[in-house]
Image (cartoon, rainbow, N blue to C red; front, top):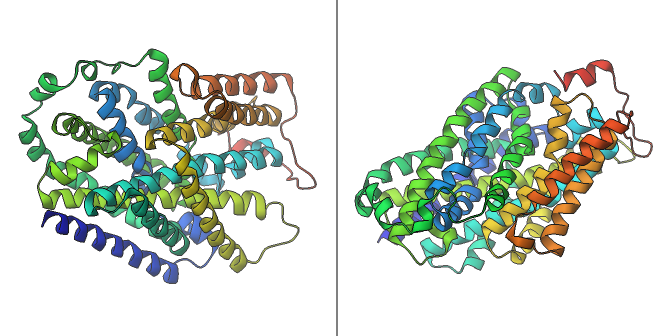
Length: 479
């Protein structure tokens, strides 16, 4: 009976998402701007919800839960301060990003650094985001496996189909409004389930009595370099995440973009604390499960059926809408930073919108294939975050915060940071068990600083495609 209720709740919620996707596709999505940045008219509370839900996908309910299950709550809380710190920085950048009115981060980088930097940045963002999409697919597969008994592979394929369909239909409009509902739903489900879960495990005191010794330390048995290897990638992604900047750009005005980070800040803290409690309870209740499924097992077997159904529905929604967000974002890089930017002629709006949708399908299939090469969601998560954080984030922050940064410096930083990440992960196979960010980030920052200091050119342009830079343009990205 419980299984039927859970399955029914998930199916109903998925159908609601499909209906919303079709509704916004027919009613709101008329241009590529509607598709990618919701016509730049999202209100404050919807923007808060979509920021939160974009961030809290498989990376939290599967990846972070896996970390908590393996290394304990204290280590997770210590590492978990990275996102609130990043959101504080975004508070001071959000209105500036909205005023730029760009579709992608490489577009923003071009203003300061030139068209070649835009092209190279777009390539590395695509590589990182396809990895992030791939673990959303796997997270969806886990949920459907636990609730329905379907093999993880079949559940993953179903998730792929749903994500691609919703991405190609309603664009950011459907994502943003379903995100808002999902954010409320997951917090509501966690809060309802909390007293039942604490009663089942024997209260907070049981954490100190029943957790393994390593799970009661602030490091979880990890070395300092290993802790940094988990701390830095997430911090770097939140600081430079193209999805964050696209949502700021989708706000109805600059003030709305800035204030939305406040709700994002408190919402992230609330979900993080609740996730720690739920995943820590899983250590006690289910000591021999796949760490990736910790939250899901609690939702199915650790709380009342109706509450578990709410949590599972919100989890599925988060996985799907986060997958939508990153898929849409990566497609935007191909469409705007490569196809439209270097096309020989003006592209009609209808054709541009159609190419957006075709690109989403191609990238979705590629992400599904990529997921088979990594052993766990946490492994893909750290690789993708490190790729983005080392290659892209230093140049983004420098464009807003450091006037001496040059096009040559940014280009060197992006190439060195991205290739160093791939070399450490794929060629050296993570020596010492350290995440690649410990190797690639210092190289990226050093390259940015040194090359910028020894070069005087502000921009690097590619081929015949140049944009004259006015003093006002350069000023707008630094003020």
